[in-house]
Length: 407
Ligand SMILES: *Cc1c(COP(=O)(O)O)cnc(C)c1O
Image (cartoon, rainbow, N blue to C red; front, side, top):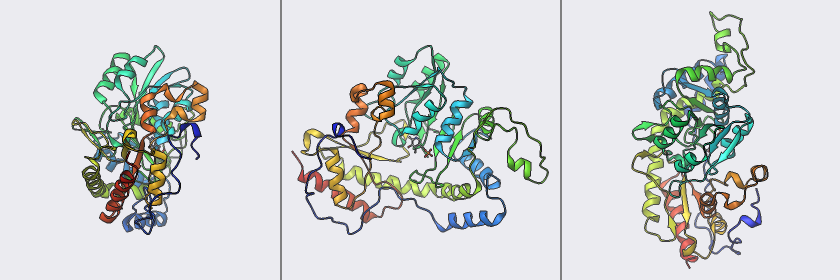
């Protein structure tokens, strides 16, 4: 997608300045699927049960156990977007309600608020973590506020104590967008283990992937209601109707959605979950290498981390210091691309997208912290497929661009 000219900081440098050090392009975030996942999918295809069934049930139990969700408090769905939408409907968020959320997120977090006819109320982020700022959440509460939808940006948990306290004081539901937060902890508690509904993503680029997929965790009674909302509003799901001992009768108690995860996807998730510890070890090692390489460079700002959290390191968001460089972020990305290093930007803030910009009459400086950081951020490759040589290539490319364009 082309970035509107008025949003770019500097025109791309032309021509790019150096021959590529790497022969092949390093993609930003390819999935890591092994033979175990492939065999499990094939087993599903041969089993006679290819939609939601025994493997989805087992994946829910394994995942719930892993994050420490209450018993029966994990619901596998076909995306994180579906999980967020289901959570909003289950929480009774309706037209006329306001939901406070962050501009520094993927569109899905905010689109779902529009889907239920509520008004997303954006508030700016903290300058260090780029997570939603609890003080601004408190200031944005009105008599119409019904929920807060914080996003654990990049895998760094939000200030949950402060947000939960605001919610408690005003009777609000907190729905956590935990798409990046697997596994992450806040004050020793895993994200997904609390009483707030939390929505995880298993999209192809996420820390655990099922191709497409998601999980909603929360209190048992909430998740039981969500299960009905997410499957046509039916009082009993297909597995219970078509299994031995099942019965044909069901009742539709509300006009629900078709958001269930099939066993073909759960088959991938079962093995990805078993491998997650190893994936995370590799992510942490890459983060340490980047930190060591960039930590004392005055043109670069490292991702923040606070002592009370365990970071999931879904993203490594590097920020450029414009005062130290003669090029901006866009040109920096082009220089890295020329060196065969794939990067990305997380995120184009919500208020810059045409739909939201027009509907709520936002200007770029409506959320100056989100906007200012957007203009100088880029996400470096961070995934368990990276070899030591790949990591060295990324580091050398970044340092080379900094050297060439130092002010
Ligand atoms: C990826 C992502 C989502 C959407 O996840 P899907 O599983 O693709 O629906 C939502 N929120 C954030 C912050 C994300 O990065």
